[in-house]
Image (tube, rainbow, N blue to C red; front, side, top):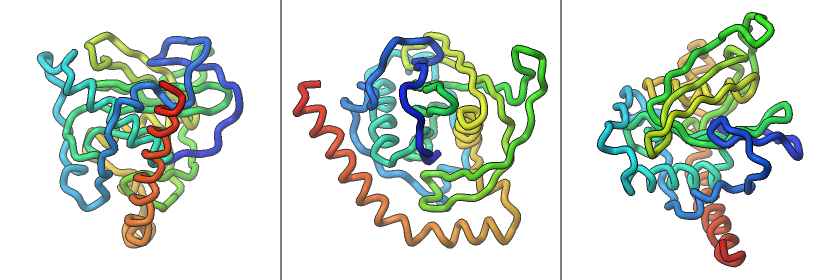
Length: 229
């Protein structure tokens, strides 16, 4: 999912747990490798992803994939990135999304999402229509209705339980990313003409944004090297 402007000094939660402070770029990204982002039309985006298997948790390969997703997400100026968006058909996504004074950072394997539960005061969730973009439909933003509250549960790369709750834009991000893992794109919710316009319009952005990601990744890693991170 693509980014919006974020407010200053949010309350920060890492994989759903409060932390006092956290870098603007997750440290995992500094161990990552930039991966190409596949775009709409690639079959991998339409195939439901396989669960991360028990024997994959805790492995260097899964950890590296998390790192690669973080770096690629930041390089693309995104707030969420699913594994199949870099061509890997596993149930895993990363996120770093801020809204309404909260910043949620982390990753989650085998997510199970509860969409639209009542909030703590028993108020029912609502569908809210807002602009949405996708790194796999580059450069295009369209209005999509999503529930304004979601809870996502799963595991981190080591197999530890994770539960993260989001409202408004954060909920939108979680729903968007879990949709990816089921083989869905946000353009699936558009009517025929708007969907066709999005899929046609993205082509002019593919190469320029790929070049920008490469440059941004180099900046991130160079800045980390200069600071000794």
